[in-house]
Length: 180
Image (cartoon, rainbow, N blue to C red; front, side, top):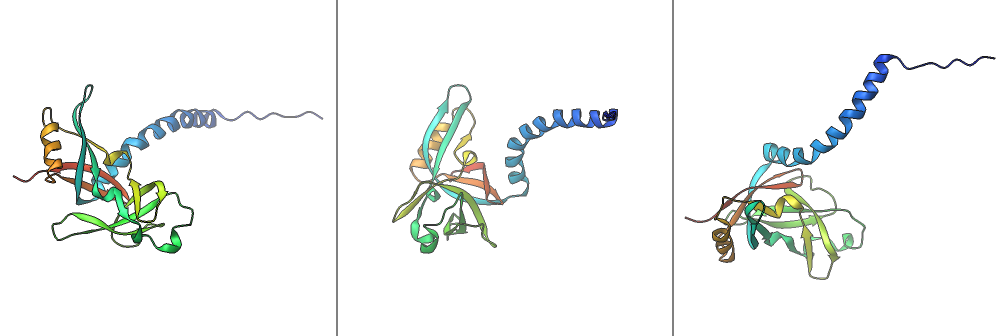
């Protein structure tokens, strides 16, 4: 008995070829689109900062920032959740009397209401604090040439505030503010 081999049509081959070409391009575009979506759809909040370093030889001045929300009180996470496995923690934030947003609660699932940021717990959870990593987009902010040292000094004095956008747990720095 003779076997018949059916060749895919030219249209089907073309669609497979286009898919093979477009898939890597789509994957490359996802990384820069995430912060763009946060900036477009996110809600603006302010966070207190702590400086780290002001200069990059190749990219110019920048401020590497540390935030007070990177260390949260372990009591904000329910006791029964501390031993459960998790990939991310979700830190719900509320503004204080100065308009600076502070951790209000830490949970294993995204909160149903309120502003929250997704974070990784660095080194696990000890008895008193949780050290959190909020990702690359909250670590470094590039500034105008020759302004990095001034911003670092302001941060050391506790006078520098980061204006960030938050959307679906993701965060991006949009600007830095100093008092006049």
